[in-house]
Image (cartoon, rainbow, N blue to C red; front, side, top):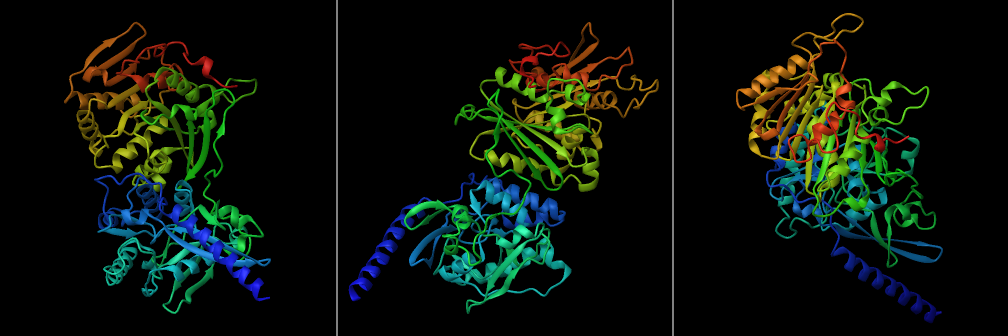
Length: 592
């Protein structure tokens, strides 16, 4: 009997040893896979000032963009091991998970802001960083393992508790509290007790649109907040924050993932006190599977939703095209009014097909560009407003969240050198002007801006000319292309449908005049009636089509190689293998 007891104890001790060794080896390499923090990224207090007047949706977008772009304190990037155990069927399971030492924050070690956010936003961040949100049992284990146990600080309930100002007020109170133990336990030590956790649990599968909250442990180890699913997922107050758990973990000395363990009825109890968690995530609208590859060109396609009401589609070339020394060019194409992403991408027409599938062919034109431009990896991102109208979307949601949409997508390539192109057709140009309205200056990594008969919203009074001029002067690698036709002369059912000033013909000439005050333009008109105005050695081009036949040439400009030309105008690839307003050069690249 004594011998059996001794052998059992030895086996347990050996298991602990193996797990500790494995955890020790793994822990030394565990960190969040974030980009380096940019030198000009806002510190926590500046970020608060920047977002305090934003809508909740725009605030969440900005939080996600900052975190995924790498604006995270250095101490928060290195994960802490937490050991958990259970006994099942006479077997002791020993698990080691790796967690952020504090809650997700924006800024530097000296000035950071713990950022409350919606669970859907937290889930998108977790997905990008190969992480998961904790279970209730994990939260308890983290509290038990914490070097620093802070007492919860409450703020009297009010309608203001869901505002950024109160978020910041509570963050400052916790900062002062943490300072008291900083000398003995520097930043990076595991700390708990000061916030509630957004958690995952089995009940979420039957409660779509809800958030699960748990924690805020008193110093006696008892949580103030029992597991609660009474709030809608849109609810965010100062007390709830996000701690990430790395998906990769150790169980009984072997590496596995948290999701696999939670889905296993025999093992889940080591991480969950509620049994199996089959869906260990919040629904974000973003695919959690590997992108699907098309059979003919080896591309990958990913569809997801960016709040509020933006459908994003990413078309990437084969993985072999992503070389470490090869810049990634992200082409953001904002869709025209009334068009779906599928219609924008296009396909070979079959009897009965909607005519919209044959007027842009952005997918085929992108494939042409990939064959033409070999020193860049070209990724196409189609952005579709939920209302299928970017002007209507901007009216409903404003402009301030648009840069965060760009940043949220761009963060997927945080480890690459990234160049950004902003373009769109028709109402899609409104997205670009919304972006210009939202930024004080156009960032240097915006390599190209192109308006494909889409500059209706151009307004010098909004600073558009000033920002474009400054951006063009800022680098010889900045390009602007404008395509338009004389829509003021066009007739719809025998009648004009735009004014001389309000259509793209009028807006393009207004932009040309404003830029002409700073840049010297050369002009010529070809035999087809195409007026070409060029400046800065072709980096700025206005291609304006006369319209003596009073036709509607709105989409024809895109279809007839307009997208291709707008992406290479002013470079050595201009007019190679195609002619603007000539026959389709991309026919072989159109999928059925």
